[in-house]
Amino acid sequence: MIRKLLTGGVVAGFAAGLLGALLHFAFIQELILLGEEYESGARVHFQAHGEPDDAGMQAGHDHGAHDHSGHDHGGGDGEETSTIVRNGLTVLFTGLIYAGYGLILVAGFALAEHFGRRIGTAEAILWGIAGFVSFQLAPAMGLAPELPGSVAADLGARQAWWLGTVIATAGGIALLAYGRGVVWWVLAGALLAAPHVIGAPHLDEYYGVAPPEVAAEFAARVLGVGLVVWTVLGWLAGSLWQRESA
Amino acid sequence: MKTISTTNAASATGLMSILFVALIGATVLFVAGHAQSATLHDAAHDMRHATGFPCH
Image (cartoon, rainbow over all chains, first blue to last red; front, top):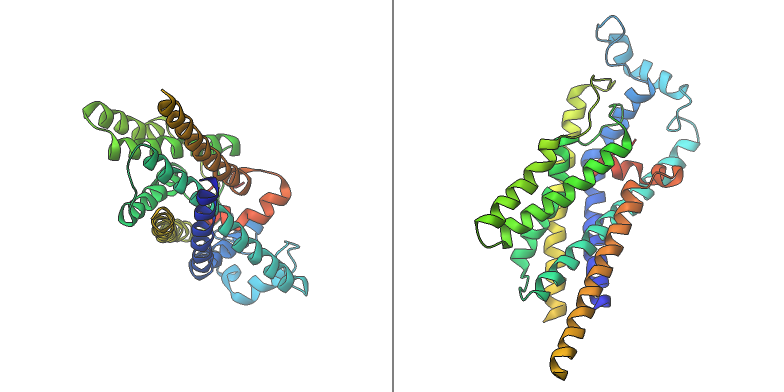
């Protein structure tokens, strides 16, 4: 039982994570690097007097500033190696995080079966989408995916809110889907709403140095990629689950 | 009587396995997504930003 769950979750999760890494490099990484240029000061969005920094936007100036910034993504021989290592770690950790999601997902399938409900592939895809809503979309409504170069509230408080939101949203969706009767649905609504009524921790002012256009595009792409990968994760985990329990 | 207790034992094992697997999954999420040791943070940095974890 344990072996079947572990194998199914890890295989489906890691495979989905590899797709996630592919989409990461197609859509997201360039914006992270761009955000870091604003974070390190290699690019400047607005100068102190509030005018767009025309000179700073010129490619030549950027590269000059970047190379001498001393930032760890700077130029020189080290850049290629560190880029390979950095991107390799991103692939590894994207696989790892989705393996973690995969394990939780198949544990959910097993729990449903324990209570007499077989999860088919179509339902598994819906579970995947529900996972996306719980782990990414609902937390993003309070704490938008952070582009480097944005500034946010205390990390511990944000992590606590993130975790509470994930648990409340997953619980709410589960009650909505499998609860029978008005009381369960009201409880589901309360769970889904609670994190947003409480509100995510935010600073009183905005200190971000990256342009809002880049941050908005980043957040949209993160959520789009997340939806695709979670859907595939649900489908993969569901297919493996079906095959194993047949 | 015997049958019932066997069934209960089997269900209990099943639930324990499920809980164990969910716990491993949660541990992976915590280590890869939330733990703040400098090495882990740097290694997981881009993934954390790209999957909506609070990072810095």
